[in-house]
Image: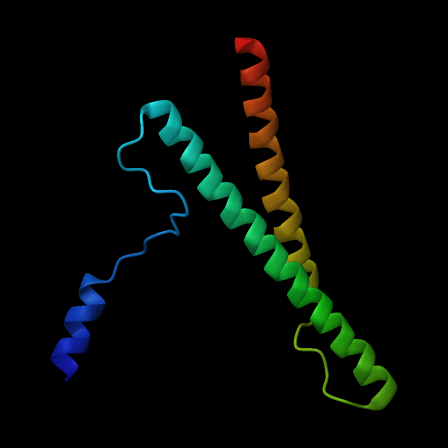
Length: 107
């Protein structure tokens, strides 16, 4: 049994989510599909993190008023996750702006 798990671990490889298949696309379509894949991952990740932060904030508020379970995230963790969301969305925004400028220049 250990041998089979060792083999599985050795062959494991990170594969990002691919929302739009890239096979058979011309270079322009492929570039657009890659951008959409990245944008979708960033937006879904940001949405999930913001939902987690809101849930944790509700849990923190409830703990203060009812002595219920405490929040899972420390103030430092919350700040770090918020900065991560801000940076991720900022990078996505910059990429979108760059693509918009490219489109404006070609038209």
